[in-house]
Length: 124
Image (cartoon, rainbow, N blue to C red; front, side):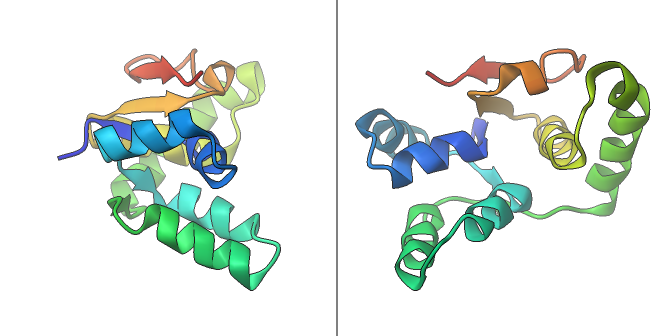
């Protein structure tokens, strides 16, 4: 079972062949949100890039966005959009980590640090 929910930044580092990201993914087999998978697909510039994305996530659990996580994300948006400019996709990632009791590993801690109850670790 996964201990971490890896944010998109870690997978991007892996796709850029950064050894630290490869080692983290291999050692921890974190889960990812469907949001992260969608962002990686969206960032693909070619069929080769898309194949690399699919290979990078092939051993990882992809957690589906469900009604509970969507509702929690909306609640987080209600609470933090005006004060912290929380974006919807980040809210969905945070809600997924919270709902699955996972530590969110991200390079973008400022996007999430104000969310009470969310466990975060800084990537790099």
